[in-house]
Amino acid sequence: MALETNFFERVYEVVRQIPKGKVSSYGAIAKSVGAAKSARMVGYAMNSAKDLEDVPAHRVVNRNGLLTGKSHFGDHGAMQQMLEEEGVPVKDLKVQDFQKHFWDPIKHLK
Image (cartoon, rainbow, N blue to C red; front, side):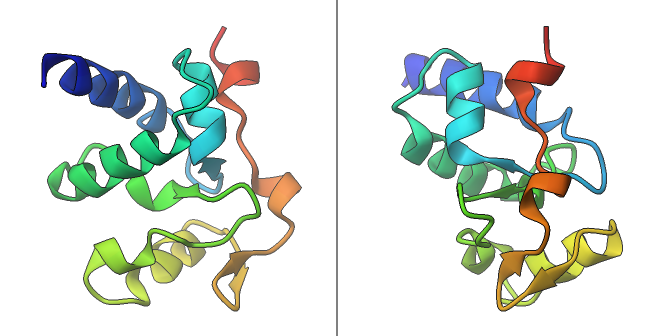
């Protein structure tokens, strides 16, 4: 459990730095914490973060820009609404202009 907690905390530190108006992916975050094949664990961390107000889990999407974590926000439209309020356009549960809005932690956290 300590290993998982440590991993989750490293993930939360990265997610806290995603700026408003940007999104990142589970895989990019996994890679940035040195666990490139642990995208699914990043998803588990985001699910566990739903009660942590300082972790903007809604800014984490899959590698194609799909809002795959939407069900963890209670109302199925909540994740999309939060992103749109921050200036991230979403259509059919997918971030539009994904590359424009993508924030790569490896490039930004050196």
